[in-house]
Image 1 (spheres, rainbow, N blue to C red):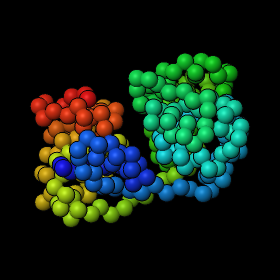
Image 2: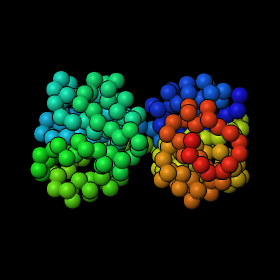
Image 3: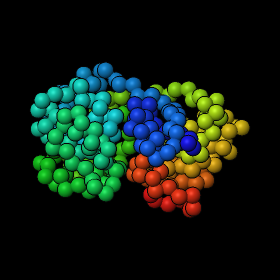
Length: 244
C-alpha cells in the first residue's frame, strides 16, 4: 500500500490511521511536536469555566485534555461552542452537552457566524480553551462585539525530533496536514537532501490557510479536505490544487 505521512500530534494519529488503512494507504506518524498538558492551567480551569457564560473549544485536543478536570454542571450548563465538527464530536464523547458547531466550516470564522452568540447576554464572559499561542482572530471579534474574553491555555506543543530515516524508508507519496504550525516545523527542519522529495508529495490540508502555508513552503501539489478518509476515498491523480 502507498504510504502517507500524518503530520499531526500523535494523540490524533489513531483515527487518521484507521481512515488511511481503510482507504488502502499505510499511515506513517510524523509529528513535529507532542502535546503536553499544563497542570497549573488545568487546575484553574474549573473556576474559570464556572464563571463563563460560554466556552469556546479550539480543537479536539483541548476538549480531551480538559474533560478529566471538569465534571457535572461545568460540562452542561453553558453553551459549548466548537471550532468544527471534529471538536464537537470530541466534546460529545467526553460528556459535554449543549454543543454548537458550524455544519459548513471548521475554523474560527465559521464558528463566529453561529447564531448561538446572539443568545448570550450583553457583556457575556467567553472562555476560549486552547493550547498556548492560538489564533487571536476570534477573541478580537468577540471583544469588538462587547464580550469579555478570557483564555484557558491548557496545553503546549513541545517540539520533538523527527526521524528522517523513517521518512526515507517509508517513501511516502502523500501527506495529511492539519495545522500550519506543523507544516512550518516540518519544512524548517527538513534536511537539504530531502527537501525536493518533501515538496513533491501530494498534500491534503484540513483548511485553506494550511494549504496556503504548504504552497508558501514549496509544496507543489496541495488539496484541501475536511477529513483524510474522505479525501483518500475520493482521490484521483489528475489535478493539482482542488477541494475534496
